Image 1 (cartoon, rainbow, N blue to C red):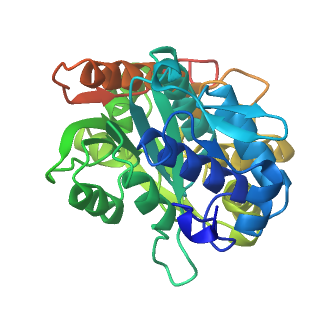
Image 2: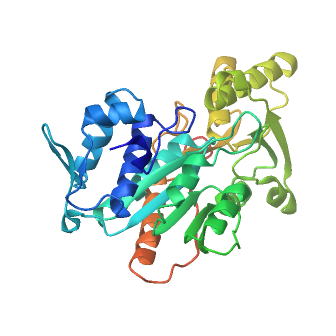
Image 3: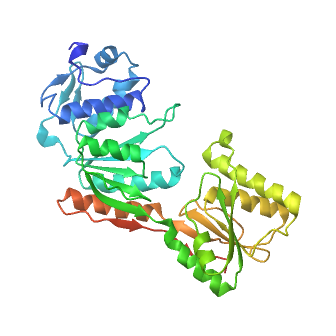
Length: 365
């Protein structure tokens, strides 16, 4: 087989490992019918030479596709494409994840979708779209995946640039994020509404007799905003943005920035600035601030009450249980998987809303 006959390529400069690129490319070539059932493909050593890659790359790709039942590896012969009746996949689902801050939440959410989709007999693929040094997204891998025409594509988190690319591709897609997508091809919007917990926060403040509230968020923005509603109902509410030390990474940088901001304010003003209630709109901001308050000897809830954002399974840790606005990525993943299943079974998809739960703990009883 000559190199020119290979219907895909791998690039060291492209997003995704070389083995994943080969796995996806070879899978697409088989599913699309470029390689017919019974076709004898190159051996692992031949693949290595044809693609100019380490032998580990075709070893990993061939092992993955053999596990999927698409090919059979025969010694001294090569890889043989299995008859289509052995193909266990009913179709294909693609999930697109932009590079961002919510790594834990996204990973667990997508993991639940993957499990449900595969259980239903559908092939699952995931693409992470990252920004290059010039601030533009690298769409090469996503464009490659879209060429194989997935049955459904889900974009996790709003990104207008990615939404436009999906719309132009002609694939059916849905968007999970804060904003609604009205572009052609978008068959459903799943709103992530963290602000749904704000009425619970306001009602709790009224019951507890709280008057002064300080909302603490990172300088790049928080996940919800309670200040407007608190002010509407007569509370003294303001926002304080803490810095992010990006040289430490997003997560640790957010935590360290909040820690330094709280330590600096305590050193300059003592405790007189503390309000009745601190509302943290980011879990990493809460972690850094809580450590600083422990070092200062601030008692919670005696000296100040606290509400934190949290993800179920990885929330901020403190000696007392925290009152929190808690997102459950497992539950949200199951809800999204059920919506995808509706589409794949031919039923009409419905727009939906995924909201956190307001849980009262000891930090704000």
